[in-house]
Amino acid sequence: MKQKRKKRPKPGEPQHITKAVTQIRLLEANAGKLVALDELAPVYLLLCQQYVMLFCMEEAPDKLRAPLYPTPLSERWHRVAIMQAAGIARSWRTNRAQAYQQYQEDLERYQQHQADGTSRAKATEPVWHEWNVPTLREPCIQANINVVKLEESRDSTYDYWLTISTLSKGQPMQVPVKLAAYHKEQLMDPKTHLARKLNTSVQLNQREGLWWLTLSYDEEVTVQTPPDAPVVGIDVGIANFVTTSTGKHYGSFHKNLRARHKRDRAKRRRKAKLRACLKKKGVQKLPSTSSRTGQRLIRHVKQEINYAVNQCYKDPDHQDVQFAYEQLSVASMRFKARAQNAYLRASHLGHIPQQILWNSQKRGVVATPVISAYSSQECSVCHYTDRKNRPDQRTFRCQVCGFEAHADHNAAINLSRRVGDTQLRACRDRTAIKTVLMQRHEAWKQQQGMEHTRPVTRRKRGKSSAAASSI
Ligand SMILES: [Zn+2]
Image (tube, rainbow, N blue to C red):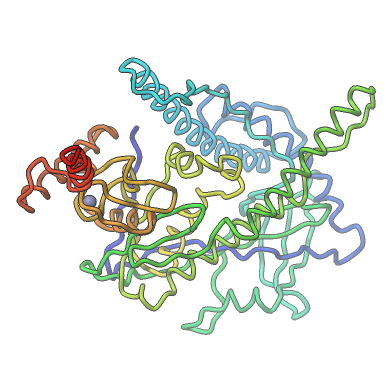
């Protein structure tokens, strides 16, 4: 799998990040002013959906593709729809390809275990479920200057004016934009006390009949981290969203989030039962199974994650450091959520590394994704790597040297040492990684003057032999 790796920014090097100004409500200056936009939305959505289907199923996503489908939209709007669809399809294809590769690796491992008779009793053969093509439900328009023009207002009543091309040729609509105080504050550059320069592309969203605008601007951030800054490792999980190698925990899916998730699941089950029952009786219009509380819960989980990651970066103990975090794969996410698979979706583990990356970018702090394989099974003292080092979810107890710690803390320490670990990075698969770790364990043993001894097992054997001799 080839991936473009972004060049890591060097200290003192300016870096550009794009920040969004969200939740700007579009005003209806006159009654019915937004009708033209309401009319445009479903036409745009339909066209965009057609290209999403095309780019997901038949062709490689291409934002410069020649128009294919007939539409009442102008050529410029048509291009915007193609570009947006290409973007959606590209990320869908990437995610699907990653999941499929993971499935193949899982299958290979399963077959290997079957062949050499080491599979666990509960192990079942992995099954591939083909992904659905994304369905665009609510209108979201990623517009550029060719179709939506953003201009500063000349009078003081409004802040900006949007000029939007409509379905009627030569009859653009003008929509005023008024920013709230907190929007203006965000747009003020604290250094120059001038308003920041906005990007020309804007996003328009329709939610429950209302229109919202998202603006964006570029900000220059300079990397502050010195190259020899100490590394703090971050382990990601459900019981603790974030655990650092400094031994701190931030945020948790347990506590009230878990209880809310359980209630939401129970509610959805009841609804599904009701639907099945009504369907049997031949009722035509069935109640929907999607839940608004479920959507709210997902938002809430993400907010808690954002808060936890933020606290971690703001911690006085974490100033002038750099971070190392695990880039979660689907498999390791599943592993981490093994006991609680139903919570996996709600816990949105994948959101945590995204937030770590975003926080490092906006603060100019270096954060490096590192290989996470076996980080939870490796002993951070002697490198002995074994599933048995984890007697339960939260405990790490080394079978060889006896080191004991909170399991996530031990993993975070391992991750902190994997920055620049070229030997691990060169490994082709998990088996190779385990071999390297066990080589390191052998080296540790030699250093300790131990050869093939295992104090923990020896102690047990000692006891039983003493018992035997007393008989
Ligand atoms: Zn150990």
